[in-house]
Image 1 (cartoon, one colour):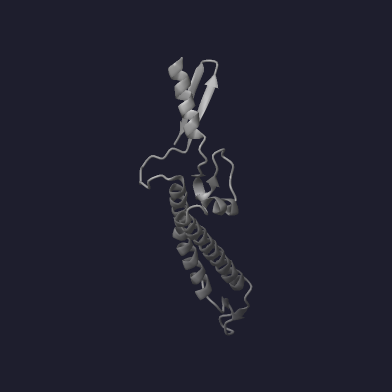
Image 2 (cartoon, rainbow, N blue to C red):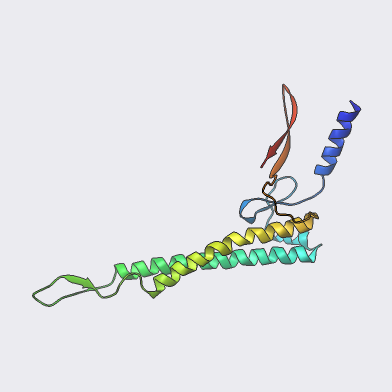
Length: 167
């Protein structure tokens, strides 16, 4: 009985430290699983300036990726709308078939496609910087591993008590 009580006291004492966690798309959660706003995260990270700098770099990268993504989509849609509503000119009398004045895609559409392609790695890279900042704040050593533990919880039912691990 002493061993069981000691085990649970140690388990709850390690879980009670205020640490932050990062889940998909760079969202930051506190110890209780509540999603934190960027301003709250910045207030917490103000204690460690290098973690704050990494977090801000990740957020800036996300903003740039969003701007590239929206600009690219707008350019492609605008180019298509321009192509759809343009006037047609008709050929000479023996061959009166209509033909478009401009070709699709134009330079604007190509720039939009390139912007979308560039936005993908930029948006994917921001999560790594946010994770690195939170790891620095939590005091973890930054080690790349193939397995990451997302959630650890205690479960109880009529058969007994156990630990649930989510990877």
